Length: 96
Image 1 (cartoon, rainbow, N blue to C red):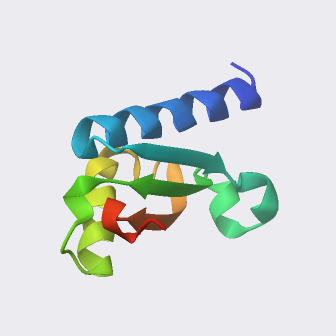
Image 2 (cartoon, rainbow, N blue to C red):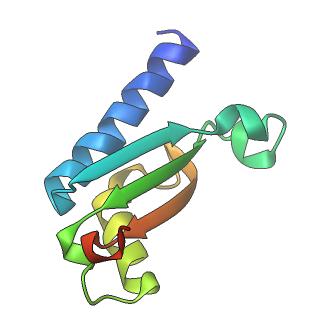
Image 3 (cartoon, rainbow, N blue to C red):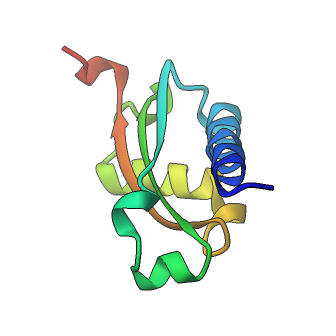
């Protein structure tokens, strides 16, 4: 499997896990691994990803709890497929 195919599969797996756990109305998953080439985490095989997610589940929750929900959803990928995850978790009421 090529590196780009593996990356695409990881992004789709992250997307699928987040969809199942948080039923977002908006979800963007990006692969930022190329920005971290040469970084120690890149050597371990884990990628750097970013997530922008809008979910009703975030209503009334502090940022740390929103991040916990996201991390819980992708827990099985942490430290193997995911080295770093940047999260932008938004409640629908916060959209302008």
